[in-house]
Image (tube, rainbow, N blue to C red; front, side, top):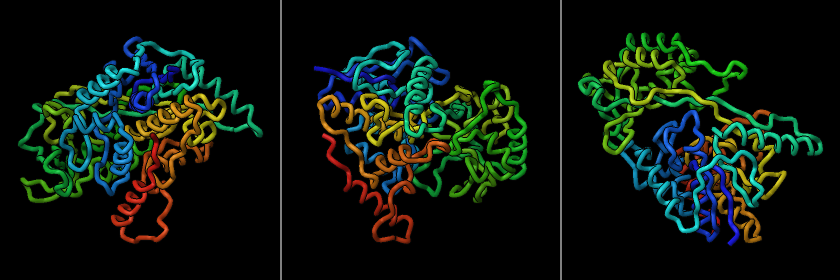
Amino acid sequence: MTGIVIVGGGLAGSEAAWQAAERGARVHLYEMRPVSVTPAHKTDRMAELVCSNSLKSDSPDDCHGLLKRELTAYGSVIMAAARAHAIPAGSALAVDRDAFAADVTARLAHHPRITIVRDEVKAIPEDRPVIIATGPLTSDRLADALRDRFVDYLASTDPPVETRDLLYFYDAISPIIAADSIDRSIAFAASRYDKGGDDYLNCPLTRETYQRCWEAIRTAELAPIRSFEEAQYFERCLPIEVLAARGEDALRFGPMKPVGLIDPKTGRRPYAVVQLRLENREGTMHNMVGFQTRMTWGEQRRILRMIPGLGEAEFLRYGSIHRNTFIAAPALLQETMQFKGDPGILLAGQLTGVEGYLESAGTGLLAGVNAVKLLYGEAPVVLPPTTALGSLVRHICLADARAFQPMNVNFGLLPPLDQPIRAKRERRQALALRALRALPDLS
């Protein structure tokens, strides 16, 4: 049987491969690791989670919770593995990232219609259909090939599209700390507003301690970026030092906000708090929530140990920064994930300008489904804009290409209800119910 080529074994490529294979297509899935490495990945496993182990809210009246239910309805391999390796995280879905990636890798490797090829793809394959899902860390050689193809297409449009063909922003990841190095006489276990049990450790800060930490972060030495590139950051994943530069209160109204938490030792809400989330099922590692950083490793040791409860912290992974690449999707993509200049080429994942683990997996799901439809001579699918995934894809394809920035799924992308509902929670519940009822049959 004629097959489908998929380039990239991240969340999007893994989901695309699974969806295509489950629909009867033979799949060749190319992953360059470990033959070639990236600045952020640590293993050669498929669907490795680089920045965080959280897949965000699992609440049915949250848009991320809605997206999870949409993906589950379509037999998502990413969601199946995430549920199998979930660890406590309050109302969020967090996973043991090592076990999760190992599970996804095993499921793909054992599928009778999926062949995993460990090699770097340096040019756009001639095969059609082909899915490019190489993520924000696309290798330089393939990125150059894509750039050349996109430039040619943009120059051929009438009138020519004036936009950058490939864009980028810088992304930072948070440190991971050994659980047994956290001072439990200071850190207390609790989730905000008691949602989901005592799944987080919380390091409370007084006003004086917070001000010392803020000043140290604001003036910290930073790791360099390439001199010819401007540091462009994704607004919803800013390094803590960028936030700190916005003012003294920026951190405690952001990742260090204390709302919904009471320190049992004082009976009061702390002035600020640093939350630590479980990183693995065994409970031996904790991730510093929202503490993605570009500070040098030496500065991280010095400054983060100023936080109460982390005075003897052992850093198992330091925070770091890397460049993420994404395309100008509004100028280049159709809502079917097909490249406008060659409908046999589909793109998926963060390369398309979606932000978030499950958003990436969702675009991979749609690309995998539509690649099979192209293979069988059927019309590709456009998802309804009333669904979470459909609204996100519609946004990245129809936004202003000249000011395009990565986007997470959110209720603001969905069309309003025919009958407005004033109460926010009830409105979100109604939007979610409408979305699930609108899901088309993708078989």
